[in-house]
Every structure is written in C-alpha cells, then in structure tokens.
Image (tube, rainbow, N blue to C red):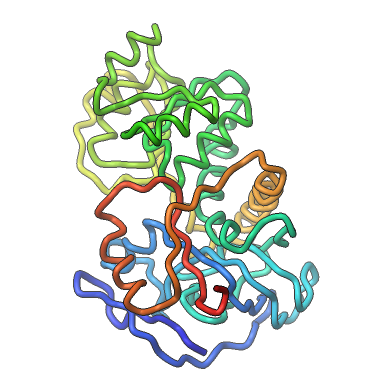
Length: 332
C-alpha cells in the first residue's frame, strides 16, 4: 500500500512516499481503508522530534475515518463494510493514517453516522477527545461554571467552547481577529480580544474576581495570563505545557495546574481508559450529526508528498481557525 513515511524525526524530518506491506488485523483490531484524517499539533511535535512518542513505523496521524476491510479475532462490535471514526494510531508502535490502510483498536472506534461526512469525521477524534477529557473528566462541569478558553477558535478551542456552552457553562474565549470574534459571538460565546484588552481589563469589564476554570489550548506566555484570569483557588487545564514560566502568581492565588495528554491511553494500552474515550467519541459524533457542534475546516490537503511536507513545515507557524483536513486523493 502507499504510505507517507518519516525516515528520521527531528529538525530535518520529511515525508517520503513508499510502498509498505499492510499488516493483518490482530486481536481486537480493525483494518480500515482510510477515507479521511487531519493534522494535529501532536503530529508536528513528533515530526520535529519534540515529543518522544512518535510512531516507530514513521507513519503519523491518529485521526482516522474509513471503511472496515478486515476484523481481527475477538472483534464483536463491528463488521466488514462498516464506516468508523477513531483515534487509532500514529504514535508508539502503531502506524497512523498517512497511508491507504491502518490498524485501529476496536476499543477506540465508533460507527460513523450517515449524516457526518468523511472530511468532518476525520477531523474530530483528537480535538473531541481532548475537549471531553477536559470538560467531563477533569472539570466535571456543572451548569453556570465560568470558563475561559485561551485560543477559542483553534482546533481544540473551537470545539471546546461549543461543548462547554452546550453543557451549560458561562463561556468566554480569546480571539485575534474580527472573523474569529464574529464566529464565537454567533455561537453564544463572550469574546476577549486579547491583543487589544488586557486580562485585568477584561475582569474589570465583566466585574469578575476571576474565572472558575481556564482552559489553555495555546501555551507559552498565555499561561501567565491564565494566572491573572483565574480566581483564587481556581483551576488551569492546559494542553500545551512545554514552556518555562514564573509560578509566583499561581502560588499566591493557590491555583491548580493540570496537563492533558489525550494520547496516553492509546500510547500505553490502557484499555479501560480507551473504552472511556470510545464513549466520549460516540457522544461527539452524534452531537455533530445533530448539528449541535460544528467542526470548522479551514483547509483541505490531499495525500500528496509535496503538499503534506509543506503542511508539516508551516503548520506551527500560524494560528488556525478550526481544523486542517487531510484526504486520500482517490476521495476527490
């Protein structure tokens, strides 16, 4: 099968098109013909050697949707011909979706509803599971809780604000442009134009002593702003903690800081946690099918070597408004 493989991770990494022998489905595995995927910051971090979790096969991208073409021993929930959505690999010993076929653990897959396109489904798993872990497992959200989302229109951010709003939270999110602010406002989200208004000014405008929870999807110096925005004994949950920061204010306000790494269950083979993620993903695909949640796709990239290499080189150089879809060329 055709695959796009990283021969060596690091600053000089690149994707090479190769012919790779597909693996047979093992116990509790599905072999899937890929119909859609997407890139995530985790992929580029592994690509450039910043995260020591990259797939030993050199085939990246865990987001996948496609058709089941083989089922392994013990599989009971799926049949050949089913179309599934999954966070299935692209790290550790598992190959990812930059290929024609991919093996996916049964415990990480759900059926793709007819009303959800391959382009949308392929963008959902990583951002959706990240948002659900934050909201349902870390925060254990209750209606009325005050939530601030840094990076409210990025991949994880644009889904998190919608879910938090759906679950009854009072949601404020940062935006860097008129277009992004207008999208947030249309979703019922309060906007913080952080380039024009300081964190202190926002709290004064809203007459708040701080937010109950800060969800940081950006990292870097935004973490310092999170310390200002959080109320005393508030919580900060970040998906981007590869940074060096002064924790003085965090200590003085008795804040808690938690990191989320959504790939841990798959990477470590934690079956019960994988099943929990499967339940989250099942809820998510139906919320998308019902139109409750919108997955915004800002760009679509074909499975072509030059286009993929260009995407990986530039992806971290700009902020994103939603997701970048990656699709097999036979789909167009």
